[in-house]
Image (cartoon, rainbow, N blue to C red; front, side, top):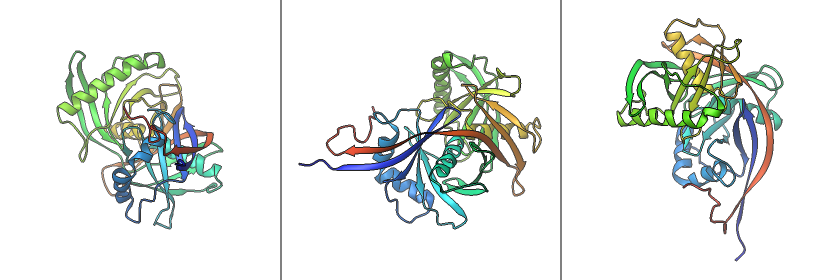
Length: 317
């Protein structure tokens, strides 16, 4: 029997060190429903494609993937569904910056403001120079402040719960050293915090917390903070995390620490930086954050899914 080969073309980029892999052709047909309905179709009928694109042997737990979707809104340049090794993401800040780099690489976009549909709402993005992109994210807000949990064999942890396109628990009293050489320990700590949140049934207003974020003083005095972010699936964000920075801005705004239009420079675990600012949302008590960072195209590939390959849909255990 001649093996059947499915070919999927992808373009890879990284934003502040965090990789993004965008499917530009060969992806599944998700039908004509809303974007939220198309996510459900992806999950229910084509989840193997998600796994094949981001899991080993073609990827790893750190990859975030994205599927380009032709938007039904003529004002939108494209829609996008982001996903990783654990499932599907409502929004991805670094991924949107990488998406813009990919669209420019393909000759689809140039300068100007571009509307991008995501499952949690429309965001806008624009180039501020050749590689830098500013993304105005969905409305973000702090849901609860000073939530206290007792993490077994670790101690008391205090944090805020905030929405920045995904749900975050932002730890306020961390004494950990946030550096790459300490990443294994930091991953273990944040996973234990996540497990405690889950066991106590602590979540956001409409869903579970899927990210845990630690903070400390920046290494570069030009920046305001340094973070470490645990992502769904157990990997840590190599970038300063766009939705995590949005959640941080929401907390700073709620505390009156940062004013509209002021710039917050968020340093990530690799020392790369996202610049963040916000405006008030006129329709609610939320903020509208803008996150700016830079992305680099680092590869083009045609993934081949061979019907005779036992790992064609990725290694999942």
